[in-house]
Image (tube, rainbow, N blue to C red; front, top):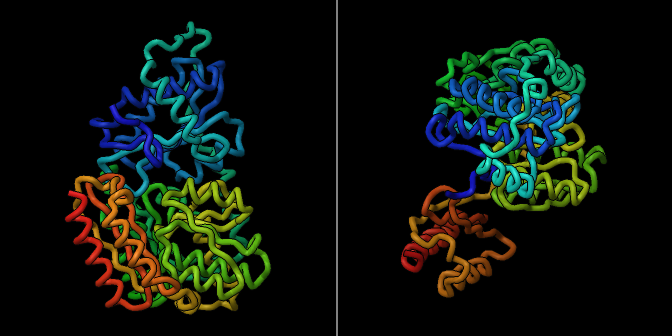
Length: 443
């Protein structure tokens, strides 16, 4: 059997790969690792139909080894992380597959407001495979299971404090992806003084992320343009990502959001160490804009965990990914779509009420070509001498004018080839050449 934990916890098709038995065994593993003894574990979920089933199994597993489960109900992942970090809890577990389809679900273990590290996941995986042999306390020592949605009030207050008066008088649209944002975002932004149009805010257990949210924000963008609104915000299923739409109905992705906030903080002298941390997928135009303003960019492998760890090492307070997973480390321990919407709006207001389109125009976009080569030996691209030499040669050709990123797909037998530069024709030719060579050499 392969490793259970991937880059974002355990994920799979609910009731097929991710079964109630597996959720129960993870609960037993977490509770055992904490030592039982009524250690408190806070549990949250998104709006998928399988969520109630998996939460019930998870809580049962926790209680069976003497840990207490506190169920929050439907919450965002950032809310669960905030509650786990600031409340009287020893750990947290989020039941969500984020931006994945409704058929999927996931289990993410959180400690100190952050996803647990690889070492802890390895320990949990070992315990899962021997879950039946773990201790079963007697009646008086069995854990309790309670539901306490009031625990999210502190998170709501945290967002209200961060927003101040930034939303007063604004006309906005929000796309809740029929997910967790549906239970908090409309009330939050109306309470902050905005006139709110809600798109995809009626979850039914099966429509989460369906043609909407941060991965498909086009309907939101059309709504903003049609109604003449000031700005739109699209969240994903568990609301840890944000993609915006400007007043013209144009999409503003995570790179542009980070760039806007970074330039504002650089100008104000509040961007710690002048650093922005992004993944290797972020557009080179973002790096050029930040550098021209006197800042520096650190790049990491793909994944918010890599971004956060680099932020901690460097002392940076702003970082994230093109997908809209943006981390404001001075306010949160994880990406938070609602907080990102607040910080972006505050930046708009701080700029004398500048339109989002004006601010986004300051972040140039270099042309990019991304091709996926179907290959059997995707992990051997670095050791194939001919393909490696071709990548090196192309990199030298683009030196100072662009870059090349080659990485194997994590889910498919494909090699992803990204070429970025100023000349669209040149990078297209380079990308096609490398893709053809990959299919010849790696099959």
